[in-house]
Image 1: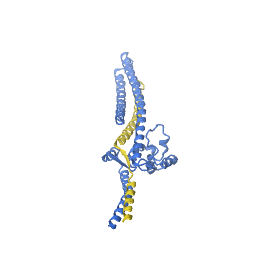
Image 2: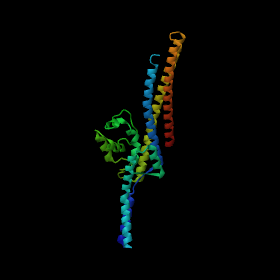
Image 3: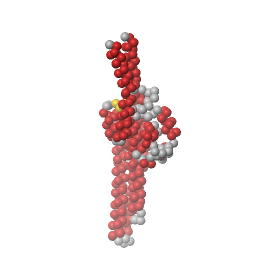
Image 4: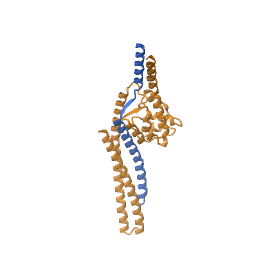
Amino acid sequence: MKKYIVLVLLGFTFACSQNNEAEVSDDTIELENATMELENSIENSEMEIAKNQKEIDSLLNGI
Amino acid sequence: MKKVIIIATLYFVSLSLSFPQKQGKGKENKESNGNSQENNNQENKSNGKEKVSGEVLHYRNEPVDQNPHNNGNQNGNQNGNKPKHNPNNGNGNNDFKEKHNNGNHNGHHKDKHESQGNAHGKHKGNLSGREFGQQRAAQARAAAAARKEASKKTIIRHESIINVYQTKIQKAKDKVKLQKDSGKITSEQAKIKNDRINLANDRIRIMTQLVANNRFKMERLDNVMR
């Protein structure tokens, strides 16, 4: 009988040890998303501003 | 009684073994669906705590990989001019790229990071779930602070560019007016020039909106950081 109880406990312990999922809070996810969003926005605006600069230069050229 | 105990043991063992498999399936589904960042965010938030098995990485790195220049050449990201403050660069990002890589790449960088096991949630190494979460939170805070500082500088630079061009446009306006008043150009020529100046003004407005949008996102990040 004891053997079986030990076996059950071992099985339970093993199951718990396998369920070692990462605990990442919502705040961390939100922070990561906000960072990524800002990064993408800045990268996008870099390109857009460079493009608009060129266009303004060509529009003002010859005035 | 013995049978029940044996069945219970087998149940626990099978449960423990099936857990990673379920996560793996979930990852496949998400990858195949081409999910958006916001959808993932909602999914992650639904349970209060994120159960990470590597799939989170996918959406976090997806925007970076949308760059068409990355296709087939991984060096684009490593040798690029823009500094990336994203802590995932070179970690899980490489996992994703490896799957979608069509051409040659320098695998040394990737192998190095993969061996360290930094693919968030997928290879936690010796860390427990809680420790891993704390480490990732610290990384996120550091990345956010770095990104905020870099963005501040970029926004100031963009604002100065806008100011320079606003001055240029004002000068052009004055010049056209002077030319028209002195009779150097006809009113029709002046109209054409003013139309071009107005188009340039529209571009300035677009640039101003972009900067305002960046400021808003930076403030949002600031609020999240607090």
